[in-house]
Length: 317
Image (tube, rainbow, N blue to C red; front, side):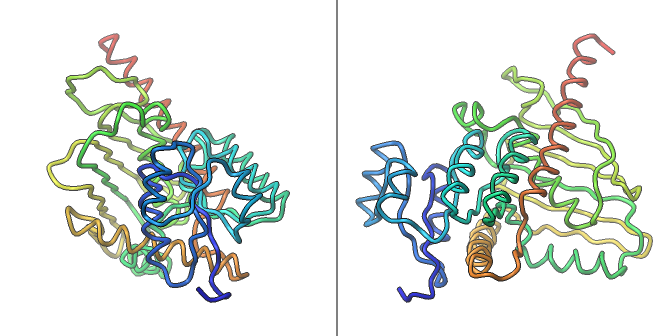
């Protein structure tokens, strides 16, 4: 590849890592340096595909320092990896949510800022054409004052039990996408949030990690927000929204069933190419550290609300 390509290393080759690997290999603007992956059997599979691998980030930095890195490791490892790469002055695109608590995202944001390196956050929906168009319509006043926003995100299959131990619960694993989407689309912050698990379920789950839930909140400008999250859906992973304003209404089924996967993967390519341009010095077009902090602050409100709802249900209130 030419010298104008940004050389990016991928950190983590798990579920999301494979998605990002596909985006990196599909892009004409970046060059894949290699993949950092601690599991030997996974590294062996990557080597069989002709991909250079490293067991640790330290080995990567010592042997083939990249221009930038894409972090796709489990969420509870995000902070340590951001801090390590920031110390090495390597710009980063970190998969959401940059930790499982707001204080972790805040520490990661400060580490990158102190080092003077880019920290972009993987909220890929900011690259969905339909959502970008909707945001422009909202900001230009075409819908008038926003009254209500309803966001739905339903996955086809339950995540593995191993994944759940690292995910931070449904409000962190899934909800942060909706929290960031609402903030980005409307340009306002959440004032409060309530919620409840949606049942019934055959397996007992922690209050903060039900298989499905409904959240109700309000934005700082007064608009009501409803969020529906679910992990068992007859269709493939799907996301859609409805929005009501004083002068208009829109329904945007931007990711629906099997067709949604094509959009999802195309947006992943758009995201990494925008990151590459930011590494070259252009304005960052994606989410950044403060957005990760804000989304995780709302996730904490959601987890608290789900816990309170479970407490009331257990006491018959």
